[in-house]
Every structure is written in C-alpha cells, then in structure tokens.
Image 1 (cartoon, rainbow, N blue to C red):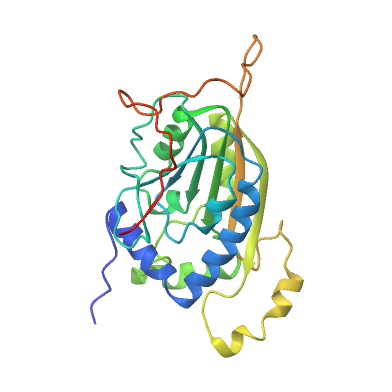
Image 2 (tube, rainbow, N blue to C red; image 1 turned 120 degrees about the vertical axis):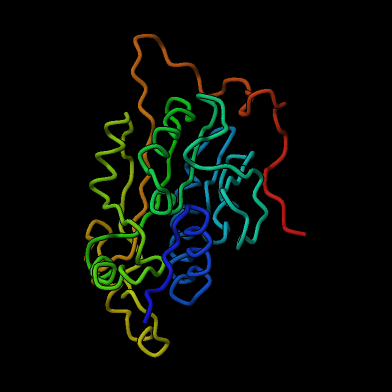
Length: 257
C-alpha cells in the first residue's frame, strides 16, 4: 500500500487544511477558535487589520473595531469569502510600519519558513500594533496523535506543530510582548457523534493555562516600541498600506458572487 500524498507547498497545505476544517472535527475546532478570536478582536483598535491565509470562516471579524479589514491569502481555493489580495505570507506586499493588526490562524504551520513570516509581520506592523496567532498544540493528546499518524501525510497531522512556549520565545526575540495566551478546545483528536455528547467532563477539567487536553492555543502579542522620544498618538492620520496605491476607504471583504 502506497503512502498518502503529503502536500508539499504552502498553497497545497492550506487547501488541505481548509478541507479538514470543513469536516466535523475541524468545524468544531474552528467554531471554538472563532468564538475566542471574536472576544479578542473587540479590544484591538487601529485603521488596518489584515487576516492572513484563513483556513475557516471569518465570522469573528464582525466584532472587530478596525473598519478596514483585508483578507490576504496565497490561494483562494476553498474560501467562502473572496480574498482581497493574493500574496504569500513570507513576502508581504504591505508598506513598512503600516498595519495595525495581523491575524494569523495556523499560518506558521502551513508556511515553509515560519521565521520569515514573523519577520515580515514585524516589518509591516506599526509600533504597538497587535499580532493574533492560533496554532495546534503539540503537547497532550493532539501532539500524541501527530506523532503516531503524522507520517501518513494527512493534514493537519503532518504539519509542523509549534509549541506555545517556543512561539513566545520567537516573538520575544523580535521585540514582541505577549499580552494573552491560552489553550482551548479540550477535545480528543478524533470525532464521534456519540462520544461527543459525553465529553463535557473535559471542559470541566480543562484550564486555559494547561496544554494537556487542549487541541490548540491562541496568543495575542504587541510590537514593542523602544524610543527615547515621545510616542506618536494613536490617532495619527490614515496612511497608505500598499506602495503606490491610494488609501482604501471601504472594508476589504466581499462575498463571493
């Protein structure tokens, strides 16, 4: 029996992850992430928010106070909402110091070079701008399943899971302060409709700071500003975010026709 094909490129991995998010277990995890993300976005302010390579729906964006929202993706296949911009996460098209907030849902795991993605985020974010990241938890039950079945080439188990402590270290080296970080979705890494009704005890046992039962995590970080001069006020004038392109005035989201 031949080994299942493992997606080799970022667009292929992202398309496979979107297919998995449409399955029962993926939908449950996506709903849990969107609920927490919606709460977090309510505390983020600014002019421009960019969502990079979303794998699931974008229901949480409705709670954001940032009016201009752009969805950037390396591929539009499998998306419910048409992306505003087709571009890779490792070479962002945005001006330096132009974006107020980035949302990266599992982007580092599908990227071939997660360090480069974070460097680009650091370049494009304004001082005190926000970065919101979600990722699969390599510890506990989900990490165990990845170790046991990752070799099969199936998404998401063949992806590179990055631990929350390691991610915090990477961001600290780039000059980010972690504001919030918590584990969520205490469910086993398989789906059973019958079993799912009996798993309420896992919710009661789970704690946001403990990774053992959690499938994923969400982290909120802020770009640190080191300066000897007063920081400019946050109500600065609107600015261009793409080289040579006039400033947009409407949300970057449009339903697929």
